[in-house]
Length: 359
Image (tube, rainbow, N blue to C red; front, side, top):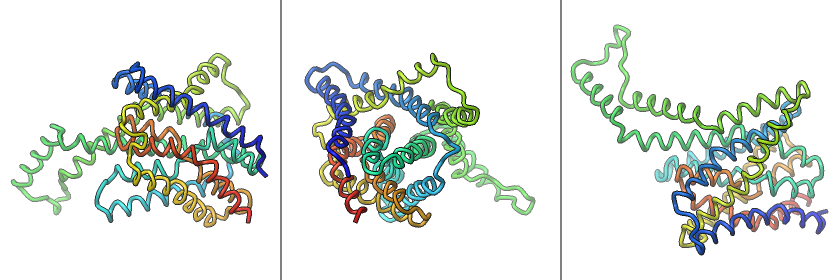
């Protein structure tokens, strides 16, 4: 049973995040300390330095040789099902496109398990939950944040493709060639269509951007170092470890600070509107746990592990997706609302799931 002391620990972990957010909000709305360009620079610092180092820290502290295979498969299947469902909905509604998929993915299946989730679920289910959650966080940093970055870069490259001179020249050249002769398939020669040329250029652009992104390197190096660390029981030199820690530890605080700066630039705290806020809360606290329950049961997760998997899916949306949304300017209003109000109602909602699963 959860005690008042456990609730206090959860609140203790959450309140400092709101303090950082409120200070940022006041510093812009009342004190006018930061310009819009400076606010963007702060968010870029978080996206390019703090989050990659935090991802490295999370991965390097997770033992890849002692992963719960059923849990990992359940988590992967849940997110895959969400991605498929969002893609189908996008096709049906024929509006919003990739932006809708990216935002829906960020809202519904990327929970804040690091700060809020670990103390809360440890209080609910003990050390077993404390051992399971870091694995989900590590997988989230390794796969799903990088997938988000890929989708953001792909979306940005598609927007830029329509005005790219190189693509226009390629299409003009191809149209000229097609007007002179048909494809010589009989001789084994095929011609690339403008669509294929455009897709190839977009993918090359996305690949280059991802290679340049610090988060790509941080997650890869973090995984490699974890394999070395837990295989041969070695540690980073103290100087290197402390240098990483000092920047990584400030990552979440700076992310919440960036959120506060963004809120101050909007006329309303509920930046996306009441209707969209309700939809995003529904996706997060109903859609996410439902998909996790279905995926976990399909994989064969049972008992306490099943309960932990479902409750962690009902945790509020993480702050990292907001930072990415702000950096790429893809519905940061929806993501900001999800973080602000999600953490406020997270504890009672998690308790509801806890008691329902105990029946």
